[in-house]
Length: 74
Image (cartoon, rainbow, N blue to C red; front, top):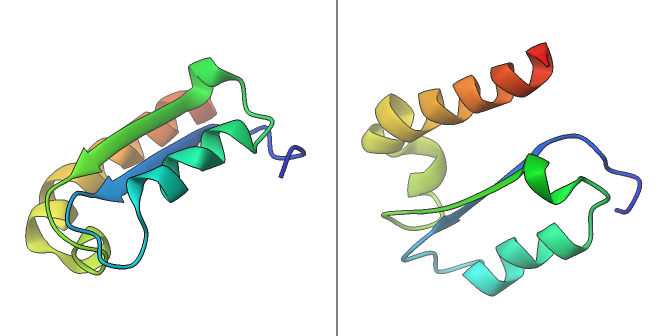
C-alpha cells in the first residue's frame, strides 16, 4: 500500500457494524500519500448507510466528490 500516493479520503460510519474507525483510519499510516492529501471524517450511520443512505448521497458524497476534483485539478 506504500505505493499508493494519490489523495485518500477515509470515511467512517459512527455506527459502522463492520469496520471500526481504528481500522479505517489506520490506512493513513499504510499508504504513501502525503499527510496533507489525506482527509478523514466520521459520518452518522452504519456501514451500508455510508454508500446508499439518502443523507450521504445528497450531502456527504457531493462534498467528497468536490474534494477529489480539487485535488485532481491541482
